[in-house]
Length: 496
Image (tube, rainbow, N blue to C red; front, side):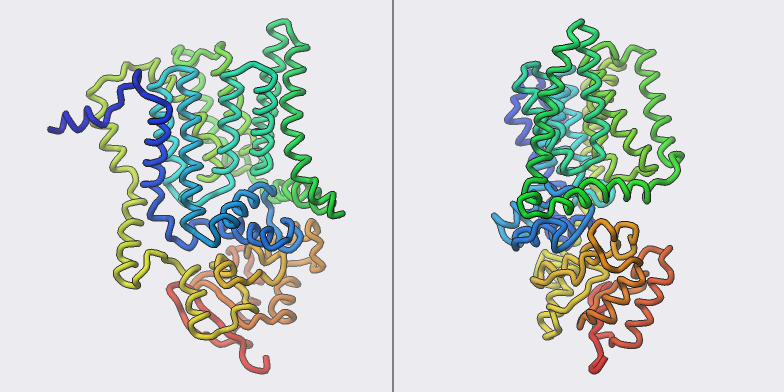
């Protein structure tokens, strides 16, 4: 019986059709991510993307009413979903699951093109898992969106050599850059690869011409994102927010490269062993390109001195293909391995199983699958007749969206930006310090309703003075109206 089950779940690789693979990847992605469709937020960045997108739908270009650090096409992606489906968490998360499936599908196509269907298939399965589990990856992040366009471009560059495909790949790379700028290192690596290939083939002029075509596609997208600002006479807003602010933030964020070195050492050691053992043929152009792109992504980690689960999403798809190629050259896959693989495949998604349990429990207890303070706090505010327009969320700021409200200042769009005073000049904030911004928020705007998180600092631990100011001000001028889950809801005292 067990052997029949295993056989039925084991694909016949030579008979695999692309359409069937895509459907399987979509099904796995949806099943892994489905219970998170009902969460208020998985990562605060996703909430900020939604607020920026809603502002765009309401007629305000990104960075003009609200402000955040990401390139504009991230917000366009969310704006299109909201415009079509309305304020729907399910629609956003479902499109996110589809995006993961598409990334995995092009991982499959690259693996199949470079080595075999076997490599492509299992690299794609691994891709769905690694882009959906372990941390806060179940939301829709800018890394997901950037790879949604980067991987098709990479496949095109491996598969085709005609000029029109270089232009199409350039457009796709341009979109990915306007979703995540750190991919510029990988794009530069791609350009150098094709230039060197042209030189090596004694056709440098052709290599240069192909890169001009590729570059024109990239530039076209960048120009198109800047065009609305130029037409509105606020081109400087685009320059400050899309180019200068990320560069400044990279310097602020930069920490020791030693935090990234362990990853570099592991990858370098794996590359050396694979070369020595001839598991990877570095003379093969496609493998060389994959290695160069991986190196470009890792270089962006080194430049920031930081690596986390979000950043690694830009490395996983390519790395999985390379690992698959190395493994198929190192060992012979036998049918006895499949039970182990299948057991692991069912055991690994512990986070998904826990979330399935949580939403069922929430349905039984509260009558709805939707859960989280970002949903329950707005419901409490509306049910109890609290002021829902003059509101300030220091936590659970997706609540603005559900209340049809907006953050009171640009700096408050993402609560953590309040303490990033080094970025204030890039959105013309008249306040020069974080404390001045807080004083303006609390003592000039004077929101009627304020939300914080219980038993947690308002800001990161290093912002002691800012946290103390907010807590003291709330104590003197506000009363605790209620506690919903982990959220504290304060209302301003009469006459204050």
